[in-house]
Length: 312
Image (cartoon, rainbow, N blue to C red):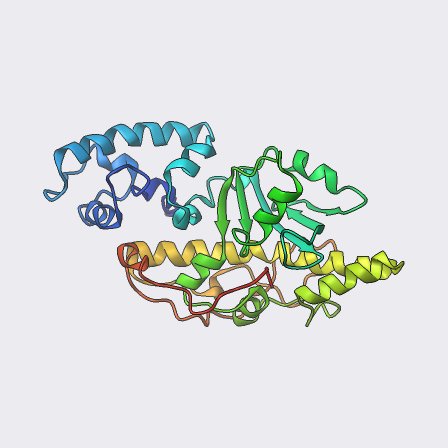
């Protein structure tokens, strides 16, 4: 019986741009020379256009990188991996991940407050609510090494830093806005969900960020059903980040290494919207973003075609 093919190496072990003196073009030269992973470096011949001192630095840093990854030292990669490349660490830190989305009373960090925080670790879903258990959030985040958000760099994280000044927010941060832009997707979270065919429940379809504000105020006025709907809406925001993270990772890895792109039909499928308590993944009908087939070295020149406010 033929042996099953080995899984492809992880993108983090194929990464060299976290090493001082190594940019995207040098990384490409290493790949073209057959140095596709850290393990290849000691055995393969080296590119002539890379200075000897840089090659020595690469060899030394690979040793440190390998040790950091084996020990799960995520802060090493936070310090050294460019923020735009944090997507490369997604699979390696999946056992200490938090998909996260917040709801607030408005868009002003100075005037408005956090009302709900939804967190999903790939298995367990948790909601933290102002006036109930919101103060438990910092403890829940203590062991998180990889944070996944949508527009969290500009919205979720600044709000949380203000609400919890002592909470550690030093994780590797995969803000999906940026890798999805590089794959050609535009608009907010709901628009991108629609583009790839992620289905929402009947109750939450059509709701947006300002509806979340309205629902909170209705709950504050005594409507408990409004809170139930708000929590359902928020948790769908959270769990839908997981298939989008997979799409972003596979798409950008394919662009970097092969100049191709991943299609959404390779991701987990389902035939109906996620129900409450369901562990199934949302359906993805098909890839409709216009990914640019260019290597990592030139992806840095792509700029988003739209700005996004909040996470909607």
